[in-house]
Length: 309
Image 1 (cartoon, rainbow, N blue to C red):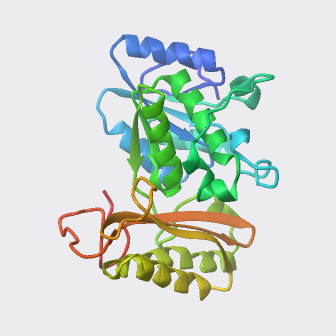
Image 2: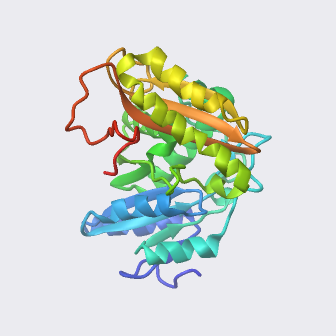
């Protein structure tokens, strides 16, 4: 599983030690190579593969994928112990996508014993997901800060399905003067419209059918965009409430930076809902009010979902 050398062009090498991987990426950067990082918790699916492909579009770069189920971002009643960990399958996927380095540390290697320093996410970290999962974003930002410090990537790639996470990571990098550029990659959806997630594997057939109301609600909200914020939320909520198999945690319209929603202009509609025991997130960029730019490729008024970019 683990390569015998720290880095061999065209081969995947796996590292478990932060110090070991840091030495490799520093040495590569010293030769002028740029480093990509795709942080994941494993259970890789097509969404993760899309992040990797996006990273590898930059010629002459080395691509690293971290596979680490971070205990700091799970609450006491959440699914840390049952979160899928198919490491060998994940490594096969990384090889197939041309990944150069995999970082697969243990919790002990990442946090040691007695570590008490964490990254506070600010007020936004207590809203939306943070209101439902107290402490979640403190755990997310702490592990991302550690990964960025260990790997020192030029570019780090995050899927926009976890949009609040993406916004908070970008803010952290700016606020703490970290060197990595944070790249957002649009949501990847299954053929039925459900956003790809490792947690989709938990869904029964009936739960998956119920979960399809989530992208349908976003589409309904987007189509109501010209009628303003109240109409957007009412249209989306009606779709969710018509599906008895879903329990809504929140449905909110926000600005793109997750501040208050505008009366006109681009915004994000965000939803979190539970199908059975499985909690699912999704969101969409849409336009509130009139004056939609027909050349804006982030909005598809016919389908109510973002175009592939």
